[in-house]
Image 1 (tube, one colour):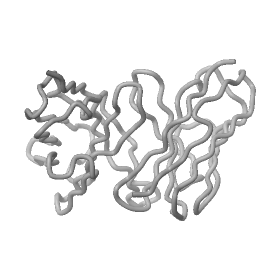
Image 2 (cartoon, rainbow over the protein chains, first blue to last red):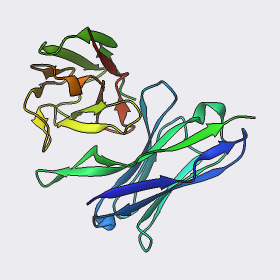
Image 3 (tube, each protein chain N blue to C red):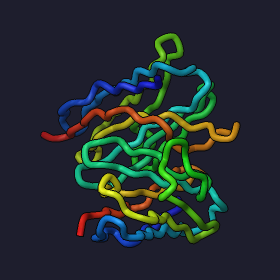
Length: 123
Length: 107
């Protein structure tokens, strides 16, 4: 069965860095685009970043562009999010999510999600 | 970025009620819209994709409709397990965006 397990969250001071990981299992990791989506406390969902199935393209939300970097390691079936210059407004639950294939086509929607990892940016 | 306006932001309903939630993109997105359900403390669950296609395993009381700039999620007969927050998401282009959410509460 598909499993996505995030780790790496914690409490960090503003301006510092953190790297999140998402261990994937139960599917062919190299066949799927992977995303990060976050949710601030009591707020809605915000898409953060995507990396295509082959790593050829990456896109970011404007709010994190230039500060966050998404990457993946096919040998470890793991997705990463390197977060630099963290701000208080980056405080959120961070989910990794798998892109869906429906009716034979890729849809940039999310059919499997991890349980989330909490990032708190505070002095 | 395409903005998605969801309404209402919250509603109170009883078991058995018909519930309708709307999602209006700031520009046309054809049928590139999905709906998710999120229970407190849990990850979202995909309900509908391509505006009206029911995802596998989702009860048939859920349905979606619309295209362009006007979309609707309908729950035909609200069940106790349906009390949750619902989000629309557009996948017409990047950046991907979500609506602000609709919290469905027990009346």
